Length: 201
Image (cartoon, rainbow, N blue to C red; front, side, top):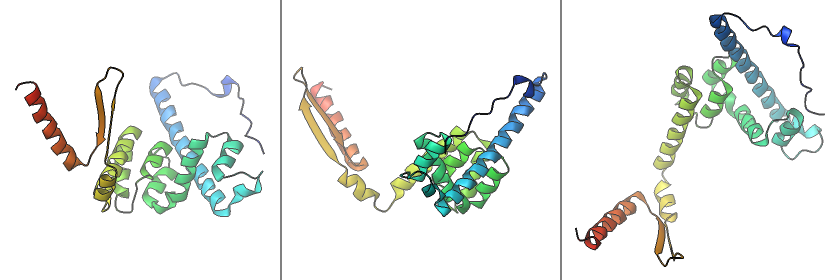
């Protein structure tokens, strides 16, 4: 099986509206159709995974490798689409908005990275009233807050501490350190006091 052949259509079959309002309407309407088509594509991928149908073609290592070969999708993008396909059915509100073309695949992809039954509705509200970048930013902040509030975060930070130093080609002493927030605050205060002494303040 090879990648699908491109569709060649003469320009006359794709009329461009003369009126600007009609042009904008045509674009947004088509965007909705594209969103709905993306939804169907993701659901087909979910079935592909469930049935392990990708195994029947050419000994591919993973479903993403099959998708890369069969549909010409970049391997990283293929992995993202498959990840969305795996978890979309867990979020019925997001799925319904995607199915009807109300929200784009870009927004769905971002939301499914951190969606839970508890925050699904809030994420969807942002997706419906903001841009894809707004959703991406919100998801990043949510993931950051989740990491900070994780019970094991203090231990993770403690074990990640490090201090490195060397002398550069000019003989200057260069150091780099990574500290917990509390240790960092103490270190910064000590360094500020040291600079005051050195500078005669």
